[in-house]
Image (cartoon, rainbow, N blue to C red):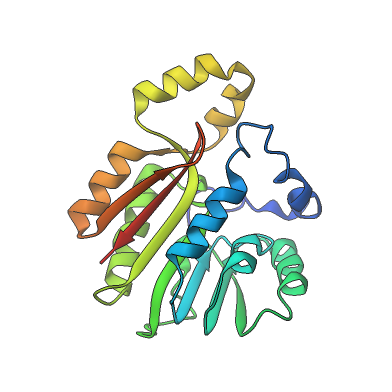
Length: 212
């Protein structure tokens, strides 16, 4: 299974610029980036084997405090190449080039995986695809397994309209991607069976922690 816009959001062309771009937290899209990564790292503490979905250049995996193994998955080979270099002394990390919805294709049913993380990647999926991914993750994890998302989100559709007024220069970005609606997505996650915690880092950056 592949996501509808996987090639559109293949970031090979911007891979070399990505690490510098995310440092600019004056940009509302980047505001809260470091705090969010630190939060994900703390929430993932104590994990044995982790999947990093849409790992990009490896910033989230680099921030992890401890682990036994990480599977880094991304559709962009150039992003993965940068991540490989950045993480070469970090520990046991396996790099897989694949779509977000295909995360278990090569991993199979490794029941030792206890945590799945993803930062600033799932907004490339349509809402229907997000919900497909949530169900797939829930079925993949054992009881007590954790999923930790950090991404670009609106609290609800009304809040999106307010953000469009507040940030008129970002309307093109809003229209080009599929930011989460926290009310809709957390409702789906709860319906599936996750216990949910929500954390705000800026107007647009939020974290969602789920435990099976």
